Picture 1 (cartoon, one colour):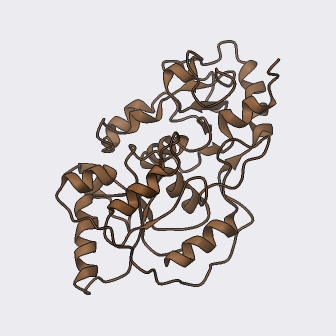
Picture 2: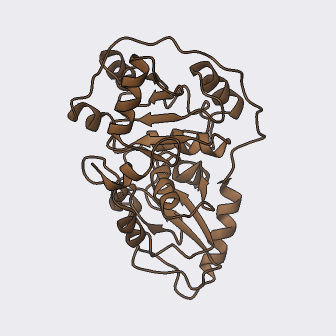
Length: 309
């Protein structure tokens, strides 16, 4: 079993192992589980937005409920704000209460895309005050690969009261804050441009672009009308958090990968639309950085203000 996942269960940290979840599912079936966990399937495909729910209907972890990136984790798009603007807190928290999750309820989230969508919900919930949210290490492929049971049956949830609604998400910034960071970075004699560069001082802001190297460099852009990256940002692709099967790499490897930014006081993380950046947010959380902020609108918001002429 992955050492990281073994060390961090849903009640204690942001990662749950297949073994831990399986033991709980068996306990639920035997009616001897000590407490109820809410399991959320967030499988999704940007190129086929109905594919995730279809996959859920075909088979999922017993007891899991489904949430949709566009319909549940995002609010409707407008001209600015990005392709996946964060759902209103009241909307998401009401939805979670309907699934049986209060602020202290263990919530385990999984997908089949190396945590790309699971981390989005993980980040959103912890940013709203939920205290026991985790992602399933390896996701649904690891669950299936272990021989754990799957089902097509949808369990009826047991709703709880909606908790107090905060004014917004903790640890999120908008384009104006990012513009200030860009202005500060531009004053540095040698602004960072790759993961091998470091900022001039620990107090200087650092922008982390979580997209692939090809998108960061502007060599390809499959989703947004403009290619490139925010001036001064360094590139740490989100896929580096896991191995190719979606298992989270050990903490020491996370530290080594993130050494270029760890120690910097102001970290702003972004991606294309505020989704896969959350995988880097998870990695930073694992090495003890709980002060990092997310530019939720990300590149899709940033480039919406650029002239397309």
